[in-house]
Image (cartoon, rainbow, N blue to C red; front, side):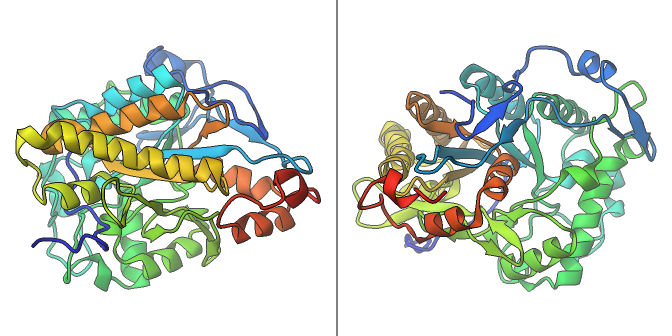
Length: 398
């Protein structure tokens, strides 16, 4: 029968409205693929780090400044669009989603896979925990795509998007990351940061400007392969002073902290035509619809609509209910003819029409949560639906 339709959560293999915040002030919104990254970098002060692969260029552009909710104010309807295994391959999905982000003014979180910046000829630099040296369940990007990923990562950060981590080798299943210790995760994270900060050495590129951030300060959260190994990765992340983790799943409630990190896992959303819910991620829709990545083309339109409507059902439930942030996670993939990419884009278009919608990155959501009064956050976390007496009464003490 295939995967358990109620519990499928992880992805087996990663393939290659208004953005102004209510409750925040902003300098500007993401600029998409407009100005070149080289000129943008040259206008910023720069302190190169290590071999010059990265540089401290100061605060990231286009970041909103959060403020506390006023007493009785209705929270915004936050939506986070996030991508596992961000990398630029032949399908050019990294650059595509930067264009979509510009079109709809949507800041996004790109979880970068560390080895996507490491050429295959240098694979023995990777020493995965409990695996042979140079092993990877993802394979290795051709060098031209390593170069392209470096360029896309630079542009995305300058446009205001968040760069998080999807770690490295993507080892799932009974012999994968679920068995890793805290020390294993610390090693995996250190190596992911190393590959991002030494690409000039490993690729030999000399004519590319550095990534405009210090990766050890920039990365404050991630998502594990197949949403596995959550308990120990959070313990490791806590030691590194990360701010959130987005592995695992959670109900449509306001985030809480685990190990001192905000749990920004994806929600379960209603699955149209069924009596159960599904994690808001492309893999989970694919597993419940076709069980394979190349299902019959005659079903693509039906599955695309079902996926879009599931995202919108989760969105509407939060919007009309407790306003809990909706976190959507996907991969750069073309499963079932790319219908899951289409579904996300169509859902974004509809969500953007709602005045209460505020698209944010994971980091920006953390900023907002941290800026609120603790009592307000506590009361939001208690809600499973809309306040019975209305928002003004429920949050009057804010």
